[in-house]
Image 1 (cartoon, rainbow, N blue to C red):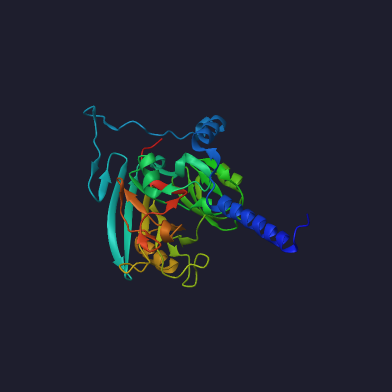
Image 2 (image 1 turned 30 degrees about the vertical axis):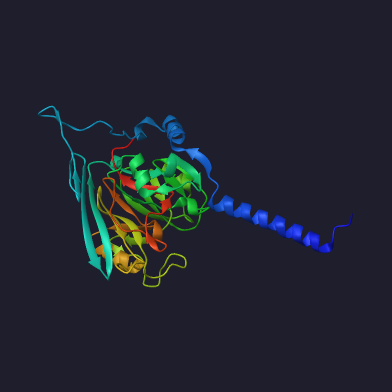
Length: 315
């Protein structure tokens, strides 16, 4: 039986449609776990020199004089214990609502990152609030959404997950809690790990370097509009940080450009600051509560993301 010529065209179109559908599903829907955090941490602990091991504090601090446990003190806008101090403030600038968490720590051990579903891979996401709850975070913001990119270094809590360079600027959080800005064109992920990098975030760009604004009015992320929801992290001094989220794309809050965000961070006394994933991803969670109003399409709701940066005791 001879197949009509148009039949081959229909068959080809059907195959092309199915293949395109698979590619889209593979890119945006199908979950692929490449590594689990527990397994990677165990391997890192086995190979790391003893002198470089960082102790994770899981026990409650005690009053050495009274021999009693010191209870943390928390309100709607503050948290404090023997090792962690968090103070939330809200600013109104350029028709934009900005949320700032001022954080002071006794040790870099309390500045951490976490991955959605405790796994590294493709299309593995969860809301910032859900990831924060899974690690008992005191304070959390969305990270760099590594899963939306195929390149860019990924180092989390001392574990190297991705060493493919995207050629961009990265934020390096070293084991002692200090910040550094590096170009992936100038250093490998392995070299960063060897130099003491504990977390590497690859969204960018750098907003403030050496206390000065590092972006211009013409700088933007990809094709982003000038005014957007934003997420950033900055360091004021040793173990003194700010976590910043600005609402945007709503009638109540316009959003900020990168230059406006950088200028605001400089006004807070920040020496080094870095832009994280923004837009609908921008979210801040404090003591289990969503603090800002994320703009996700036409409604205010959290977008699922790949990872968070957080403050907490979680192991």
